[in-house]
Length: 302
Ligand code: SF4
Image (tube, rainbow, N blue to C red):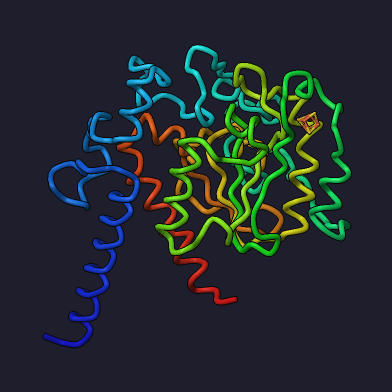
């Protein structure tokens, strides 16, 4: 057997090992057909996912929800209180002609151009202050600014704080946040290596989708954070984050796994961890997406 074949076989074996580790860390015990390389459409019962099962038994996730539905959920989001404005039109739906897909490179609305003039992330936080700029301030407990490495190569962007984030002032600390932590570990990083933020910094009441005026008011702070950090990769978690950043109405189900670009920064759209809690079979797709992120960062040494 030639060295090339041996090397290729070893690489495949390593990939399978990593994939199994990823599934294991995310609590996915039944990977369908007994193979880590089972087809993505192979069904995996929610009951095999301990986190998801725990959530459902606690009533936090509606058992009647269709796993294939538009995945726009936030951490710990009560199903009964969700609205689906994003799924119907997209945050920027009205700025994109009917039938158009994708970001500005694909004929969508123009992307905001970012140019950092901030001396630090702390300066941006100070600028936010005890913010009353939009109506989301009325019910929030805490402003969830974002946290992590100010020089991160990788930034995760979600939709908005959930209940636990609102209480703690930290992004992604609930069950979905724990899952995000496992995803970060699975690609060889630690939470403190990356930066994590949301489009809006105050929890929308009842965990509803942030409204257009709220996004318009709060998003500039996220853009300033991104401009300051200037990461190499942004992972957009879920439709709202993806649609907001890329000014598109394209659903995450279609966009995920495809590299996009935003101000010279690579963007990887993928499912929100909260969606994975109720659709654990989608973890395979997230793993595929995150492997692309990992490989891209590995091919670009610091
Ligand atoms: S969501 Fe953003 S703009 Fe609105 S009150 Fe909170 S910090 Fe201010």
